Image (tube, rainbow, N blue to C red; front, side):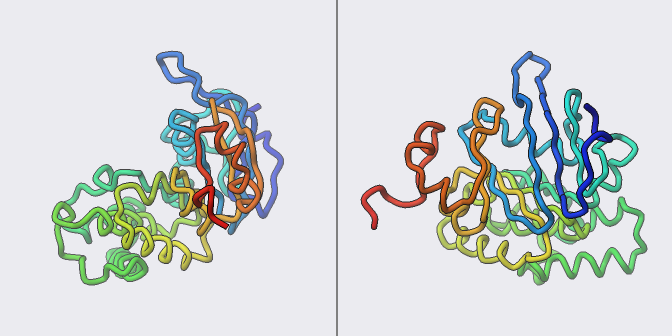
Length: 253
């Protein structure tokens, strides 16, 4: 099956059908994965290291290409002919913000995407201002990213995708490396993005509990559970079988 053969659904932000992927060394990373994410949903991908979460995310904007199976974003197959449109809709934020920030000044990093979309200069400036304001970093435009804290860098990395008016935010371990206050601030910030579809890969089960209504559990490259967060994360046996923890101490009431 290829991307064009996925049945269309106007409410579907992501449609994946029978996706299988092997890395060049032969390692099977995804094994017959099928998944639907509706527009406006907040979905967490959880699972042990090596379960396929990041590999799945990298298929959503064409960094990795589907050889077996189909992937669609907003009804467009993730294929070369549509990559420009798809990458303007999918905001992928990497676990390490240093992988995303490379310009001398913050404003240049945030402007990078809109500039490469060929937008007029005035529109680029407006998007940069709007994106930085949205993440509470409006006063940081002229700063150098290398001198920022991890939490500040993560906010700037998020602004780099918001400046492209992304409809789908794909976040890989967004709370990794954050202290408790920065983590709480990030969760509060992400809750404000009500018009976006959110797909979050995380080992932080409290973040998942606080932010996402639905959880998809991957292990060994396969989806082993998919359901409401309140049900799956409360299933201690399920969590333990797949190398995860419930988001509260076992002796809590």
